[in-house]
Length: 382
Ligand SMILES: Nc1ncnc2c1ncn2[C@@H]1O[C@H](COP(=O)(O)OP(=O)(O)O)[C@@H](O)[C@H]1O
Ligand SMILES: [Mg+2]
Image (cartoon, rainbow, N blue to C red; front, side):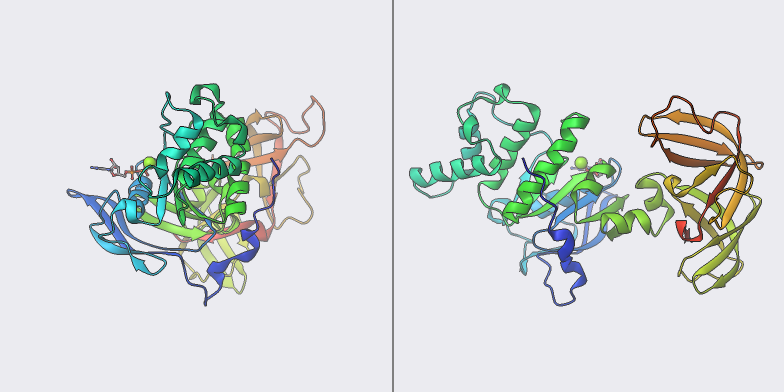
C-alpha cells in the first residue's frame, strides 16, 4: 500500500479562526458515583482530523469516547456534532461509529458478512448492500478476501475488516479505541501507515484513543494529553513534543531530563537559572515569562544533548556540565547514556550510532562533557 503524506498536516484548520469545528466538546464531565472519570473536558475537533486522546490507563479516554458515541451519558456538559446537540440522541442515530478495542469479528461469518452486518438495520436494497460491502472491502484493500473467515486472515487484515465494518454506514466521525493494540510492534507500525492512508482517502474524521505515545505521534494531526480525567494540553505532535507546557506532558511524551532551579535573570528570550543539582547556571532561550527567584524546571530532550571526552565539549554549546558515564545501553540504532554529575544527578543522552563499528567512542566510566545549546531546552513552572 502506498504511504501518502498526511495532507491534513499542511491544512491546520485549528489555526483558522473562521473554521467551524465538526465536534465541539463543551465542558464535559462524567462521574461514576463520587469518582470523576472525565473532568470538565473542552475540545474542538475539525473535519478530516486524526485526533488522538492519549494518557495512561484509567485516565478517562474510553469514557470520553463512549460519551461521543452515545454509550455513556455525560454528568454535565454538551457535545455538538456539526452544530447539533448530541445529548439525548441515541447511539444509533448519531453520525458516529465506534471501532472497539477488541475487533469482535464474528468467527463463523465470512469477511463479507462481517462487514455487511452493520447494514442489517438500514432500509436499502440487497443490491445496494452488496455494493456497499464490496466498496468498503476495496477501501481497505481486502476486495479479494470477502469469502474468507476471520481465522484465515492475518492480524493486520482482521483489523482492516473491523475498520471496513465500522466505516460501512459512512459515519462522519469514526471513533477508534486502541485500534492497533492487538498487533505486534512491526505490524502495528505498518498498520499505522495503512490507517493514515485510508483516512486520507475517505476524509472521515478519526478520533483515536491510545495509551501508546509513539502511535499518537505517528498517526495524528493533533493530540490531547489526558491525566486523571482532565485534558492537560492539546497540540500537534511536534508542539506537544517540543513545547510541552508541564512536566507531566514532557515526561509522558518521550523522555526528558528535568533540572530544578531558581531563576536568576529573565531577559527577552534568555532565561538564566541557577541549578544546584548541576552545580552551575543554565541558560535557556525561551520566551516564557518567569520571575527572578521563581522555582522552575529546565527540560532538555536526551537527543539534544551532546557528549564529548574533550573538556571543552561542543564548541557551539552554551551549557556545559562535567560527568562520568554511569550506565550505557546499546539499542542498535542509538545508545542511551546515563551520565552522573558530582551532585549525583543523572543526565540521560541519546547518541545516534551512525557509524558501523563495534568500538564505542565513549564508554563506561569515561569522564565526559555534557553540553547543549540555549535553544535545546525549555523552562517549565509546574
Ligand atoms: N461504568 C463504570 N463504573 C465505574 N467506574 C468506571 C466505569 N467506567 C469507567 N470507570 C472508571 O473510570 C476511569 C476511567 O476509565 P476509562 O475511561 O476506561 O480509562 P482509559 O480508557 O483511559 O483507560 C477508570 O478509573 C475506570 O475504572
Ligand atoms: Mg480505555
